[in-house]
Image 1 (cartoon, helix red, strand yellow):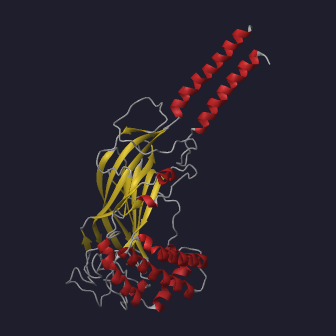
Image 2: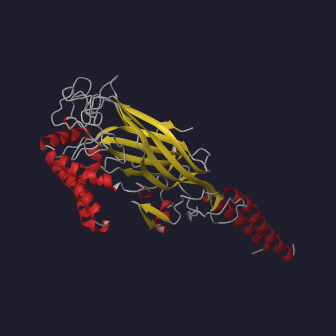
Image 3: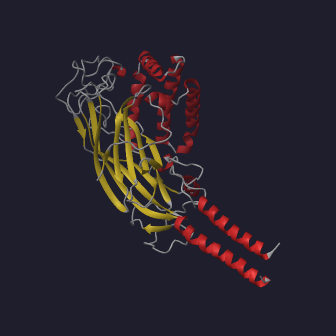
Length: 246
Length: 225
């Protein structure tokens, strides 16, 4: 083999290697991602009458199963909690964030009652049959169920990421863990409201009715069938776009 | 060295290079980014782009709608601030495979100032009215349920301090710029650290009785169509 021929052979080998590598690289180099801005709203919140929160320092009194000792109970309380936002393709979590609600009688689970400076719930200790009343729906110790229709803009999620194109299986999930907050200690968890919506290119809004219940019969709620139940409509506005990452 | 051998080595190197490149481009199964992934540079508002994937920059496949996109700025407590480019980079830190911390990107759109203001006198009253013996009873119960065997009085003292500081910090934030409240925040951190050292849990975990989930997960629930 001549010297020149060998050079040509080497060069063609190099070029063929590149020719093989480039198309393969093109097929595997990048990936799609779905990025969303998310606005989370709460409205149509409701709570049934079988809650014993804010009663006598919340301590083991068989709430709503028998009766409750109202000593030092206020008959009115505001809820706090944590709002979480998760994106990805279940079970894979690609992005997440959480927000501890301030004790402002507004952000996490605003109520309709006027007691406790407003935004609170007057039925949280209504199992106290000595104090409960049925004539003032916005006052403390109210005996019945309550609901609050006001729409509350709770949070904004900036650029939440999911692998894959929007609409190809990825979702956005809102989790709202609601609890009653004590001034010193200790909080009573009520339950977690969960709303899930698929990602989609563009600007879209969904409203999801969600509820949960607590039948622990201890410091928070009654036992079945008098379970403490609460819920809300969680509204999610998502502004999403599919991006290609190299 | 013969020319044939040189040609063989060149061909081999080309193939090895191609294999190494492909291995680096693989996506990690847990949802993280591969080390070779290009950090996101921020979306361009260009219209639909269907060019062949030869560019090394990310591009829009389906453009976001006009309007609410907070391009270049983000809202913090109702005040527009310039986006921190480092924060954008950090979101795509390749060393963090799953569930990047994102608290700074998830927040109330605007602090409900009036609501917070209204709640403070009530919270102060509740704190003043809280009977210590009842709080101690609650703390005892919570410590037992969490398997914490430390003096309950000490825990209670720290919880009282934390509650008072929380109120003072909220008052401070309402009255003056956040920077002015830094000393209070330092005090809060100090109390938090003392509690953590004593109880082995954060104050928040103790109050709620729930361990903080380091890795969030999807839960069943109500889904939209």
